[in-house]
Amino acid sequence: MKKFLRVFAIGLFALFFGFPLYWVVTMAVKPKAEENPPGIIYWKPQNPTLKNYKDVLNLSNTSDSPFATAKSYSALTPLKNSFLAAGFGTLLALAVGVFAAYGIARFRSGGKELPFQILQLRMFPPAAVVIPLYFMFVYLHLWNTLQGLILIYAAVTFPFVVWLMRSFFQDVPREVAEAAIVDGCTQWGAFYKAVLPMVKGGLAATALFVFILNWSDFLIALVMTQEHWITAPLFLNSLSGGAGGQEYGHQAALAVLLILPPAILGLSIQKYLVRGLTFGAIKR
Amino acid sequence: MAFIVLFPALVAIYIGFTEWSPTNGTTFWHAYQNWHWFDGYWEAIRSHEFWGAVWRTVLITFVCTVVEMVLGFCLALLLVKDFRGRGLVLVYFLLPMMVVPAVSGFIFQMLFQVDGPINGMLSFVWPGDVKLQWLSDPTLAIWGVMIADIWQWTPLMFLIFLSGLVALPEDQMNAARILGAGFFPQFTRLIIPMMRPILLIAIIIRAMEVFKLFDPIYIMTQGGPGTATENLSIYFYRLTNVSGRWGYACAVALIVLIALSIVAKQAIKPIERAQNESMEELMTVGGEDAPAERIEDAIDAGARV
Image 1 (cartoon, chains in turn red, brown):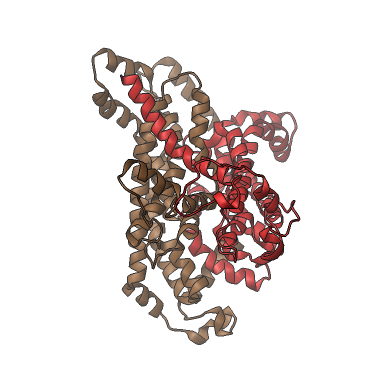
Image 2 (spheres, helix red, strand yellow; image 1 turned 120 degrees about the horizontal axis):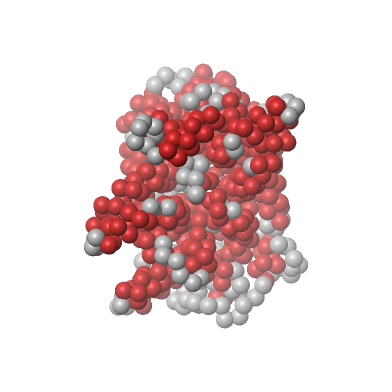
């Protein structure tokens, strides 16, 4: 009886957490007539089709694709923008953040307060912070450019890199760097040759983590880009207000494409998820 | 860093004292032409819209954090024991967390349609056809938004609590069980006190993020109907990109930022403590009755620091 209750409870949870995903995955293969007809609900697709994916990726050149008329481009450009902005943003944040983290972890640069000041940056609502950034970027002609987006993404995820990498560097015994220096390395050499190889796993996890964060952004891209430079989540949103009414099928296909990279990357760093999401406060 | 943090802050303070907007036809350093000192701040403090947004933000933050914590804890308790295929089940429950927040907004927008599957499911258990206007009814909409957030972020709470439960010292739990403690005493006397630091960190981190919630709300309702789901983030966005009141928006943003940095200072403390825990341990270990190995460990670690 007790066991049955337990399984029943887990089943209820599974239904709640699984159903929305089931719905978007099946919606992506439903033809237009089954998307959201009044009065009937298609619990599973009757005539599954790949048309939605083809339309979104600009693979079908039929005229009934809404992108042929309503939009001059398909989801390819936004997806590419998303990928480039998130990728280069991640690299830039890592390039700056890793050294900062090493300095803080090893030499206590900036004293006791600095790491917490850096963390505080994460607490402010980006909707407020982005307002003055907008002026600045218009003034510097960085608004609505890929470079500008990369720069903001790097700045926004910088605290994450510092905190995560700091927790990884702290796991490396100080003797490692000291031994390397005794063996004739410079301070830099000790960092590159001795310490960095030891945190390789942590570095990879941090990189993937930051990539997921950048990939998931919506607000910053909403304020900072338009038309040609929008990212994929924005494109997803822009589809809903189109002339053709609701485009659930196409939106769902794009949504699945958007979910896939973070899902795969996220599961591959499952071991570090808790550490990453709690800024390294819980190390398990 | 100075470029991307300090300069915008100064600009925001400057613009906050003016009634400037890009549509004025002047560039922002000419904003002094519309200088009006603290009028923006006054207006914010007396504005119903601002306080409404504050109230809704607090409500969303509170409800979501509490519900996510309770659900996450239940799920973690259910899944803490090992069974066949547990690894796969864990992955299944982590999936919502990986979904891009904007996409989760879109998914729930679909689900909450009048002819959508949520009303469809309710029709199974409720007599008659359920036709709830989830996203266009002023009282229901905010709950719809919260459900979307709860769906997405309960897995995070679950993951944090699970890692905490797994790490609980087993001999104490066994001792309690052998001495005949039931589930509830075990739960309230042992599990909760031992998990306290983890609970605290989880609450703070989640509250921090829900406070900033924007993407799903924007996609599901754009803050509407009316201002029924407008939290602070959406309010800022509307002030700037829709109403074009940049000067006022800066004033409001500064009020919120100042209030937040006071709260943040307090909220950060438990994380700080967790970080410094290893240090504290060194201080408290030692003395005559500490076991020999622990002292040795401490000395080893001390040499490192």
